[in-house]
Image: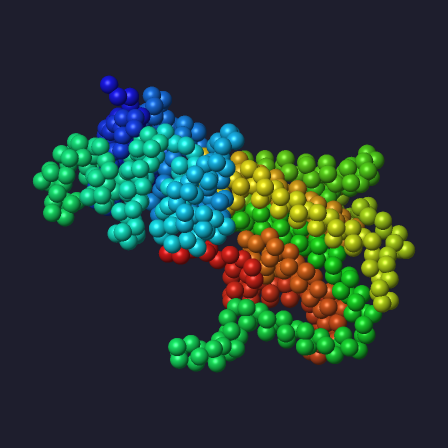
Length: 237
Length: 345
């Protein structure tokens, strides 16, 4: 039996009067890549924000067995949860190096510099631009920076919110290949929210489909790829 | 290719219409208007006015940096800053004259006291409000300013008090350069300002709390997502800005004397300096501070000789400060060195 990294049971979330998630149940095993598919406004981003306590949430969310609903975002991050928000969420005025440094904000060990070197080896463009302000990087470079920054906290759980948004197809392919590599090499568990279902299902073990705030379908990546409804709605087949 | 050459031909006029062009033109008009009076007054007088402005420049710079720190973190103008600084100067004076604290010890204790008060204000009166909704918070800073002014008047009276000088201030403590006097006090004030800027640079760029502060200033949401406790970081900003404000007030109080409104009168120049330099740029606001101080000194000294404007008398500088703020906000809202967000979409 594999261990659970993340377990959402009966999760409701709301922005003021508007309820965005209804009774969401979702599980991610340790080491898995799980994708959440859904149209705009289905509640994909809110699911990730609920996990990080960035939105008013009821129900139960457990990370590695610990209940986190009601906890402070800063404390959830200290459980080695990294979140790459939609639109990358880099610090535009800070240099590339400082962005990576701030990614390691919660760490107290002495290997931060070694990790910076490691991720600049993985993304050589970041080394080339290490003293430049993050805001001056191209969209693809910023997404690399956002991922490298998230990895700087040595996450056990990595949340990725529409990493393909606004990027060219070739760059998206490279990015997803990297996610697959990172998952295999570091064993980092990933929960990926995507509209680009083709690529996401290629690296994912399992997936969920979210519609109007509710989970309407779940299954292995292969099952979802061949599912008639998914093919029509998200695979453009 | 041809389009580029055509463009560069008309470039001076194009530049003149930009924010920088308008600001430069405005400065040029002031300088040209003053030239006859400066020539008539002679080099010695001119040099004296430059030296006189340095002290103010340093004080405006320190006060402007305190404004910039709060603005960077919250994009908010802290109208309580001046009176937090004023109150700190009273604490310093009180410790020195009533309890015999040596002046610099009194300055540091006052800075510490107001840093604690600043962080308490952030925790109790600012944090409960949504940072993106500016109006309530701005009104609260106005309220704090009024309360502090009333308290200072109540505790220590509305009359002027002489403030002890933190530097050698005997009339003979000065250098003479080309006949003009450069006072030790001025050099001391500049030295303390330089030390303080260096300290802030180290704090913001070489420490973890500095990194967190810059992260919060740049992107609050992402700062939370990397585990920065944003509330505490803003509290640190308030403490730092309050302590700096007190330092600025203690450096200038010898010249202005202590009274409950003494910093409120001065902060408008610091605000002009920060607006000119860029409200989110520490370096820019220092440069802005010296530009404002030099222009102020020249206008106060020579302004009455500009035909048609003599009736403004010593209020000339105050009017100019407001005009400067208006012109910058209208034509170059980011200021000279402010970063309009450097983002490629």
